[in-house]
Image 1: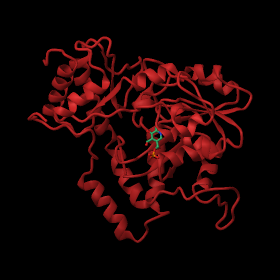
Image 2: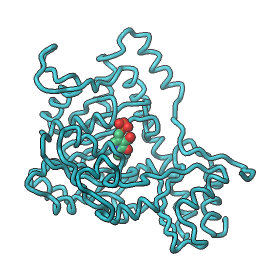
Image 3: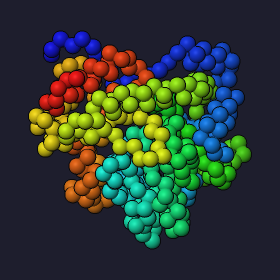
Image 4: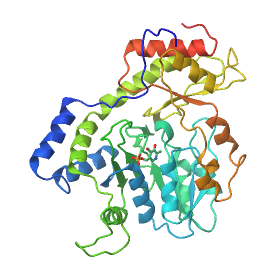
Length: 377
Ligand SMILES: Cc1ncc(COP(=O)(O)O)c(C=O)c1O
């Protein structure tokens, strides 16, 4: 390990005295669950996304699961989904005993285009999970084609809080949207999640689903789970939500710094941002093409060189979902989704969060440039 002037961590949760005070106040209040904080967080969250209803749950996974249940996805139905995402975009399909039907991604945005999804619809297709990967909202034009086929769209906006596309907030582009407040997310509560929708029936069904399927108390109408959020979580979430603009602005400023300093590198693509998109930069992922970098370095070599200089990095995601045993069991194999498979081998996320100072950004830039054989400045 060489001497490094600066250490650059990949992520750091942004906790201030305000979050600590909010959590402490709930602990002193005597009402830790089912109380006013959850209701207030839901209202404020729905307003921030610009939708009618928000249902607080205890993870983004639970939000995805509740949405698919509310859509009526069940035994033997097919649900379209990208193979290039975190597992929890697709595992709720399996939880509902439905079949994940993967469709390859766009090479520049890494998202699944709804028009491509619509072309893959079959007779049993009931829903589509469209992910706003890394914080970039998917292209919504093709949603109408899915609607026309009766396919309900769940926008997995777990990585995209605060992002927008043509003025519409992430989470509001489909029939329902999901968010995660896991510890590394742009706003976080440790664990937590939210489902948003403009459809009152979807919200009612999701509220029941998170609370053991109960209608009236101790009356069980349908299968449900314990997916409730605590008031401690909600209180922390409210403070984080109030800070969302500031936290997002810091990520965007860091991204602009990297764009300016790395945009000229041969063999390195900085994130593509389509016109009309305000990116949330949950991740800032480079694409490293080993055939074109100055020194022939590939993603893993760049990652190792960064680590040598104290710069942490991440790979989201090293293997597309269809190549994992859980999903390969549906008959998928290597070569099925060539774009996702190529990108999984070239993608590399740099530290991007609000925890970074100027010296850390500069050191990261110098280290990336050196790693691909370019002049450091
Ligand atoms: C795209 C995506 N979907 C779903 C999830 C699941 O969220 P959680 O970890 O809160 O269950 C995550 C994050 O972890 C995610 O990044």
